[in-house]
Image (cartoon, helix red, strand yellow):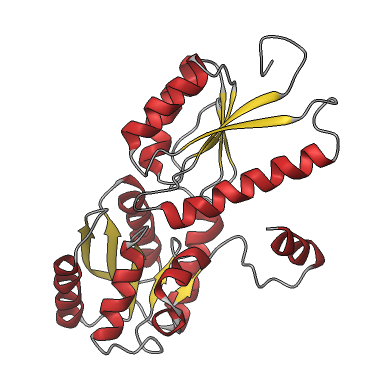
Length: 275
C-alpha cells in the first residue's frame, strides 16, 4: 500500500484527535503520543529512509467534523493511513470514509468490541481484556449491587450491556442505569446523585467520558459518599481526567487500563520521560 503517489519525499499520514471539545483532555494525550512516535521513528531514519509527515486537524469532539476532516485527508491531502478517534461514535463516522478510499485507520482507544473492519487496526482494549477483569474485582471486593451511569452514545450503552452480563453471571444485580449528555450540566448530575441515594448500590460503574467525568466525581464528593464503601469504577477515567478533577475527588475510586504512567518498568519510565 503506497502512502503517497510517488516514491520520494515524506510519508504523509493523517492525525485526527480533538484539541478542543468535550474529550480534548484525553485526545490531546493521544495526539502527543502519536507525534512522539512519529518523532522517534524519524529520528531513527524514518521508514525506508523517508520521514513521516503528520497532517493534523482538530475535529473538536464532533463526529461530523471527524468525518469531514477524514474526507479532506484522503481526497485533498492524499493520505492513505489515518491515526485517530477516541469516542466510538467518531470511529464509526470515520471508518466508512477509510473503507471507501481503501485506507487504514489506526484506532488507539479502548472500545466496545462487536465490530470488525479490514481497514482498521484496533489497538485499544476490548471488553474481554479489561471489562471482565474489572467486573471480577468489583464483585469480589465491594459487592454485587451495581449502579450504571454513562454518557449518551454507543460505547457506554454497549459497555454497560456487557458489564450487565458479567454482573449477572456473578450473581449480581444492576439496580439502575442512567445516561447524561456528552456536554452535561450540574442538573444532570444532581439527578444522578439523587438516584444513587435512592438505590444505595455497592458500586457505581461509570462510562462517562470527557469533561463530565470530573463533574461526576465532584458531585459524588459533594454528596459525602465514601469511596471505600461505594467507589466509582470506570474504564474511561484515565490520568488525563484525574488531572482535571484533582487528587481529592479521584482518591479511592477504581479504574482498569492497559497502561498507567506509574509503572516501574524501564520501558515505561523511558516512555513517560519522553512523553
